[in-house]
Amino acid sequence: MDIPLHVPGGPEYTRMAVRVAGLTAESRCLNLSIAYNLAGVIVARTVGCQVLAISQHVERLRMAREIAAQAGVDHLVRFEIRDAHRLAFPVNSFDCIVAEGGALRWLFDSPEAAVVHLLPFLAPGGVLAMSDFVYTLSPPPEPVRERFPHLWTERKYTNMLEAHGLTNEFVCWVARRGWRAFIATSGDARDFWESREARSGLACLYVVARK
Image (cartoon, rainbow, N blue to C red):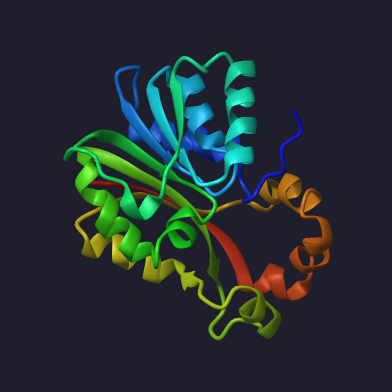
């Protein structure tokens, strides 16, 4: 099934996060997504653990269920439509929270608000794996600021995570080769992503931080 990538990187970076996290078949994973919860499917397929995949898009979640079935992990991934702001779980419910594609920024008032809300659900030693677009220039090029007026910088992200007691174990920018599939499925926005301003003023940050 041909699914657009809503963030550069894709499965390669999710599998990397699984390795850094040290997940096993006994791990418990929460996946927050603004797209197709592909990261949750990849986690389940990689280590065979239970995944709760949360979305707010009925149609995208339906497609995610189809993908999970095709991948043979539909018995491992439970999909639910839920409001991220109202998520409530017992303390220490998960060993890993995966929020790729700017989910922390889009689903909550800010990435920091997301971390404050989610951190109690993460068990000691558990990891938060997230990715988001960040500014690489200050100030950013005007076309970048117009399209993404509320992005953070890499330093602001990593400092915020550390301020809440997390240890940044892996921090990187997604390599340009990881942008190809994303750009190819960007439709009318393709010219923007291939522009000089976007290439110089934006990066996709991937962080794995441990509690």
